[in-house]
Every structure is written in structure tokens, then in C-alpha cells.
Image (cartoon, rainbow, N blue to C red; front, side):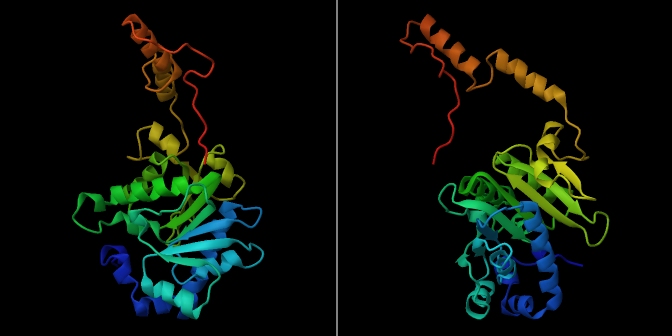
Length: 294
């Protein structure tokens, strides 16, 4: 059976009849509700928050977000005018709705959102929207995750339920999140069955991503950062780390070979002094990384 992502771009696939099915099909609504509840469980927000809903469609997830016991404020993005029209005019959802192609970036100011949720959307970014270099899936994923990293507050987290075609797409999506600066992990419910669901959990700082989903039963966690250390996502999973990479980085840091490290800065200043250049005196602030301020 063909995947809809392989047939048409999302703005064409979600035509008026398809958008209508999201409000008339009890099966679609039931599945969407279950996945949204699961994503909110993983987000574990303890108080009403400002949430970004990526691929909000007709507002099925948004209705749950704004209803008790959650009572979150939310903003929804979607590429389909038909889906947003139903959400706005017929379902009269509480969230603010924006027509947007997330592969072109998000455009929100830094640190504005507490969390992000997305149901069945990320896999659409893995298809090229044109022949131009900037429309390649890798570029679209890069723009999306980099903009998302900026607009989430420190400690903010996101949960994305998605359907990758294969391990290559799964690795592409997870790798793009890690490169953008997120701590990321992939969680799989009902693995090995036709009802399997993948959830990408991301965090902006705040410790190990696996602490977000500790205590959940029958769930296998895959930490994207650890996969990257053992050679990227070419195969194999698990949580085994590789200390060789860490030792090599520490050795390079001590030798002053890592650009931007304190040792590198001091070595450059010594070289400049030997050439007779005027160099500022060393202080306790030399080479110290500054916190990002908004």
C-alpha cells in the first residue's frame, strides 16, 4: 500500500474531502486522541503552558490541549488551507491558527514556547518539495529543527509522533534534531506490531532526555546522542556508549586543539605575544562560555 507522503505534497494531499474525513471519521478521531494523550503524558507539563502544535490539522489535538485537565494555551501550524478552514470556521477551536510550511522555518521569537507537540507530521519533511538545493529533505529538516530550538525556552521539550518510511528516514529526522542542539531520544510503543508508534522526544538543555520518560512500562528508549557517538545511525540501537570518543575529545581539549576552548584561546594568545602583538591579560573570564540571554 502506497504511503500518502510518496504520492503528493501535503498541501495537495489534504484536499477538502480529506480534511472533511478528519471531522467525520470516528476512527481517525479516536486514534488521534490516543496519540495526543500519549504525547502529553511524555511532555509531563505540570501547569498550563504555551504549546506549539505542529501540523495541527483540524484542531483535534488542540481541543485536547485546551480542555481540562490540561488547559494549555496553544498555537497551531499547518500547511493545508482546507484543514485550517475546518478548524477555524466549523470547529471553532480555541488556539491561534497559522498557515505555514514548517520546512521553510517557523519565524517565532526566541524562547516563547514552553513545549511543542506534533502528531503524524514530521515524515512529510522527508520528501523534496522541489528540485532546488534548498528544498532537499535534509535542508528542510535542518531549518525546522534549528528554528524550533530557538523558539523553545530553556528546559522546554517536545514530543513528535511520526511514521518514518524506514530506518534511513528515522535516522535523518533524529539526526537533524541532535545537530540543531536538542537532546533527543526515540521511543517506540507496541514495537514489532502493525500498531507500532514512534515518538521523538526532544529537550532544550535540562539534563538527559531519558529522564523525561523514565518509569514508563514496556518502552524501549533510544538516545540519539549516544547513537551519534558510536557512529551515527547506520544501524544498531541500544544504549551502549563509547568512551573512546570522549577520551579523544578530552585529549584534544587538553592539547588546545579544540577551537573555542579555553586552552585553544590561551595558546593563540601566547602565539600572538611571541609575534609582538598587544594581547589582553588573562583573567578568570578568559575562555568562559557565556549563557544565552534573550
